[in-house]
Image: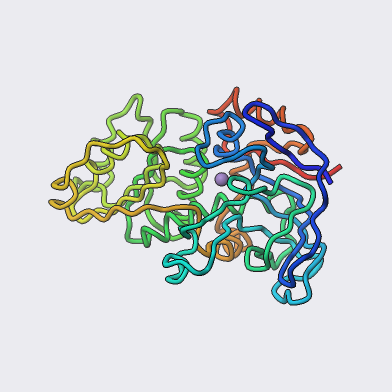
Length: 340
Ligand code: MN
């Protein structure tokens, strides 16, 4: 079968690899129909992903149709449309035992730490396979994973309809978090430095948008909250200064979610956190969010087709990567279709 392999930074090839076989009784083999290209795939390609090793079959956003199952598999059958959770955990460590396997002490993500989903067939354990109950558009099956990131963020924040939320950054994660927050009837104000992205965010339900290169965010937040200050912040910009800004902007008793993986420190004092008794939480990957997202896709509460900027055949991976590299501001999600 064919797969997309990054041999080393800036060298990507369609390679011929062995098709996976059922080995364990809980194995499932999926014929991939759709994959989403993520910023972290771009980083693996660019050589800037600190977690990845080479050579690597990339792709952690993928889904398709079940073609083979091990003898003990009961939750899916041949022909089911599914999305595959790329999070692989041990089940034994503290985090796993308390039900937070997405931060397993020996966590591996398919497409990052081990081979991923940009290939014609993928094998995964039954527990990583999540099925659709309707005849969903095959090209969108790979977009469950990016929405699980938005779902996890909102789960960590315990977003409800009472919340007013600032989302910093209207990239794919900001937009996915926005859609999930709106599906819970929260009020959302979202920022970016690119006007087109904000137009897109508006189209996806943002109550207000702020072009931070031209407008005063603090002033807009004042109006948005009747002078109260913003109680909930989702920082998808993920720079040391955006974290500082979140802590400054949050109102007393505010909640902030952090998703960045950069190692540079931010200048935040204990007093900044204590005085306002802020709740600052991390959000990584997803913890059992696949079924939640699939349900919302099927109900039409989340609209993945709006996240998709363009689709390419997987054999045109270089063209797809080049497009993302050259037009980062125009791209939310590029989808690869695995068909001949
Ligand atoms: Mn991703």
